[in-house]
Structure formats: C-alpha cells, structure tokens
Image 1 (tube, rainbow, N blue to C red):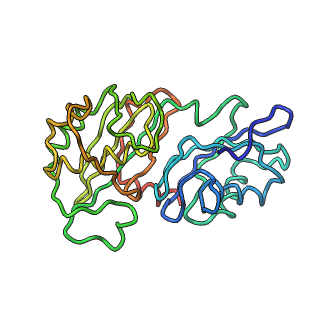
Image 2 (image 1 turned 180 degrees about the horizontal axis):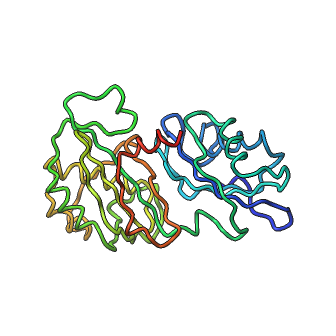
Length: 277
C-alpha cells in the first residue's frame, strides 16, 4: 500500500530518501492496520512538516523484524515549505525515533520510482555460530549451535547462482505464477563466529532470501548435501526447507546504475547501520 497515489493535478516536490532502520520493533515496511510499521512511522514524522503527503512508496517491502541499510523511498510532497535538502533531512530525523534514520535525500524527476526503477538488490544474512547466544547479537543474527561447513555452503551457493525456477524457495503466501529469478552471485564472509551471506539478484520472491539462508545453513550443518541443490531446483526431491528468522536479514544495497554485479559487501551490516544513525 502506498501512502497515496501520484497525481499530476497537485504541485509536488519529488524526492528520494535513503532510509536505514533496525526492524526489531516494526511489523515490516508497509502500512498495516493495528501494527507499527516503518512506513507509518515515516509518514507520522513527515506530517509534522507537511500538511499532506502526495505519494510515498519504498523499493522493498521488508518483513516484520527485517533490517535495512538502503530502503529507498520515493516521496512526493508539497513544494511549500521549500526546505533545503540538508535541513529537511535533519528535520525529518528530529521527528523519527532513533531506530529509523534518513541517511540521504535528493531531488528526482516526477517519473522516477524507487520500486520500479531499481535494477536489483543485495541482501545480507548473518548467522552467529557459537554454543551460547550473545546478549547483543541476538537482535541482528540467527544463532546456531552448529559449526557450519563453509566449503559445502560455497558449493551449494554456486549452484543457486544464475537463472532458475525458485519455486521450492517460495512460500504458500506467495501466489505469483512466475517463480523464475536471476541471482548474480553469493558472497560468503566470516567475521569471527559470524557468517555473512550476501546474495545479489534482480528480484526476489516473498521470504526467498530467508529460505535461501535456511537451506544454506542446513547444508553447512550436514542436514543436506551440497549436491542436493540441483535436485531441489529441479523439484526432483521433497525438501523441508526452513525459513531463517527475520532478525538476521538486512536489505543492504539497492542498485539504480546497472552496477549490481560489481557490488561487494565489505563489513558487517549492523556496523554500517551504526554509522548512519
């Protein structure tokens, strides 16, 4: 649901916001009845500045509990008051809670839409491998007791890269007929006990990244063999794929310049998040 539909009859200022948020306290991005969402929180903050919001949509409908470094928001607001961009950024952040921040803001054309004009996204999923859960990391990682086999995960991830029918990674709530998607590649990096799995793709199915993470975790835990990946993609075997919990997932990067394949995740995403607050 968008905050409003774009209208050519109203004089608007066309903006693009990059939003970062800790998703722990929110029921996802999109406005829902009787739920606290990031979009509703942003809308409330903007209402302190503008009499109305002509249009607002995000580039990704992140789920409940999912975090973002790069939720890009297309925003159409009245031209008055004509606030300079840096002052507007500070003003919006003044009215936002500390777990939601405007990272950047820029003017765009009336035809630009962050949801439809991006060329793809990169998500990072974090798995904390340790016998005891961390009092701090539990907000941003999936904790597992297993010591994961990184070599086997790499083999499975290589087979998942490319254009495939990811029907087995769809959930029943996703009713789209076309489940073919293109994943450019996976990047696997270890930061001490934390395994970061970054996947870049043109588009993703509902909860697809969390199910990819769940499958790769189970490959690393020797519950599946890496060689089973092709059978899974071809629906040759019945698999009970788990959906990894939401708190480990970050929307990390959104591409508008056809350079998605060259993007590389270089640090733990919650460290980047801390820099933006």
